[in-house]
Amino acid sequence: MDLIYEGKAKKLFTTENPSELRMVFKDDATAFNGEKKASFADKGRLNKQLSLHLYELLEREGVATHFVRDDGPESLIVRRVEIVAIEVVIRNLIAGSLKKRTGLPEGQRLRQPLIECYYKSDALGDPLINDEHIRELNLARGDELEKIKRSALKVNRILTIFFAKAGLTLVDFKLEYGRLFPDKHNIVLADEVSPDTCRLWDTETGKKLDKDRFRQDLGDVMEGYSEVLTRVQNVLNTPS
Ligand code: UDP
Image (tube, rainbow, N blue to C red; front, side, top):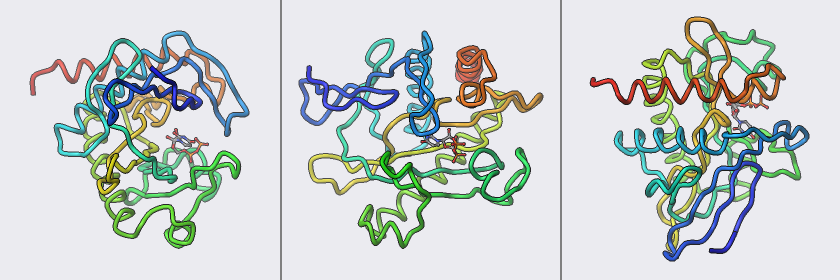
């Protein structure tokens, strides 16, 4: 089937069903707006598997997503969407660019989850934007933005509790939303949810188990991802 999109970490192919696509997770990793690049054996499979478990969890908890079904080691079948050009970041603890912007110490817990929106534009380097910029740029209608924020906070509540059971602290994460084809009335969670897009720290030791191992040259990048997957699977296999 035809390749319709190739991003930094994923490829999208058409399927025999016009409203569904095949999302293939690549072994490539990039950071700092594509300036830093590497490839890690098995990353595609690990991220696919984690995204699959997390999408199934979110769907069970009533979050509307683009997920349809599993499709082999590195791919998922997803609903076709028109991606909203906003990266929604939810933060629970200070890290990354928020540490730089506020001067607050890494690891300090925020008083309440914080939502940020970034303009999804490689040419502009994904700048931080507010609701008024979103309105001016016509990136989403007011009611769509409200839905997106409500959903993102719900995802945060679900994932925070779930990862805590795995001994992991969900520090922050990035979500993308899309409008479902063909009528584009419904907004659903799209893209991936994986250690590429989440900061996850071991709750006991504070050890980083996500893409910061790559960004900060900490080594053992895939060992971190694989540890996250093992713990997630242990929680899912433990009767509640
Ligand atoms: N993030 C992402 N893609 C991006 C930028 C950020 O998935 O293009 C995720 C990142 O993994 C982290 C959260 O969003 O979990 C917040 O990232 P931050 O703004 O701190 O930027 P960074 O330090 O990643 O440059």
